Image 1 (cartoon, helix red, strand yellow):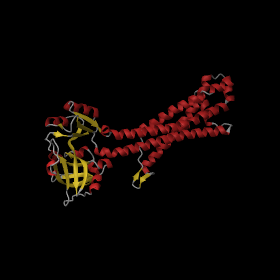
Image 2 (cartoon, rainbow, N blue to C red):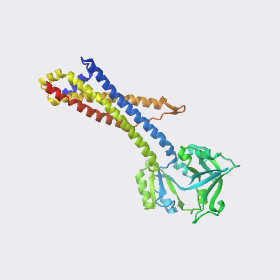
Image 3 (cartoon, rainbow, N blue to C red):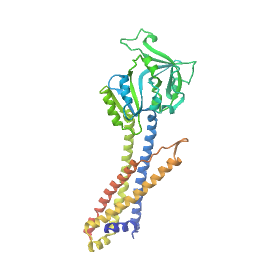
Image 4 (cartoon, rainbow, N blue to C red):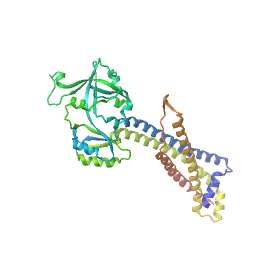
Amino acid sequence: MKFPFYIAKRYLFSKSSNNAINIITIIAAIGVFAGAFSLFIVLSGFSGLKDFSLSFSNKFDPDLKILPASGKTFLLPKDKSEALENIEGIAVFTPIIEERVFLDYRNKNHTAWLKGVGNKYQQVTQIDSTISGSWLTSSEAQVVVGNTISRKLGLSIFNYQHLLKLMVPRPGKGQITGLNPGQAFSQENVIVSGIYSVNEELDDKYVFSNLNFARNLLNLNEDNFSAVEIKLAPNANPDDVTAAIKTIFNEEVIIKNRAQLNEVLYKMLNTENLAVYLIFTLVLIIALFNVVGSIIMVILDKRENIRTLFSMGASENQIKKIFFTQGMLMTVFGGAIGLLSALLLVYLQQQFNLVMITPSLPYPVSITLENVLIVIFTIGILGLLASFIAAGSSKKALKAV
């Protein structure tokens, strides 16, 4: 066992004759423990909240989405559709038609987006898991609306006495004043077959219909679509699939992944996570000042021992390494115990729901390797700096010898 490590271990685990130094050492160790413990708990909590927030949009958003580079629609003829089917990594895809529409129901009005979807849409997303009622059929003009839209208009499922009216301006030029609504708007009466609930924003935005219904209402050609939504195969590489799609459409389209479709949400969650990490890192820095103070107090208390070691041939660097090692040992033991305790608490929360947001909703937490490494890296770097600063005081003690 190396000489500095052996002496540092003795100094760390043996009691000092000065009781104040023992108390300061215990406080320093508790500070490192509390810093590592709280940092991991907070990071795990934010990871859980992030996963919880994204779980709603993940039910609605595809893995990849093809959008027109300019304008509202792009052409997807049969040959390009077949080329998409042949791309390795694409499990299933469905073309989409989207347009803003006006909803009218018993003298109540609302503006939303009509989203015409194909038969494979339920395979691309998990929207069917959020629906009360039934999904679309081709037997009649049906729509599925969001929960917020349903509440605002007072809609109910399969109410044949009062149908929902969808209206969209007819394409053309010039003013529409002087025309009656029947001439200015394309309109259809539909039955509400289902109500979906994802989150408040999406529940207030989309009305789903069959692809043919949307095409007829908007008077679009058969090969014109607003987007194509894609579900990737389990082991597919998104970058490879994106590159293959670009070779089919050239510069006609842009391709977005799930993170790019929710860019604002991802930025907000990442910014909040970074802000909390920096705040708790500052708390950890303050806690590690106790380590610096503890090591300095030990150096002052061990001046006679330092004189003896120096007389026995210990070099200045070896004596400095003793107190540097002591600081690192204190940081490593305190941080490891704090991290393990935090891991245990987070695991218990996952298994037994110790903290509840509502009677049926436990506080979401997540154990990730990334968070473990962040805590280890943060504790390690800050402990290294604190130990180095504290060990520098040994030179003054040597000068006083």
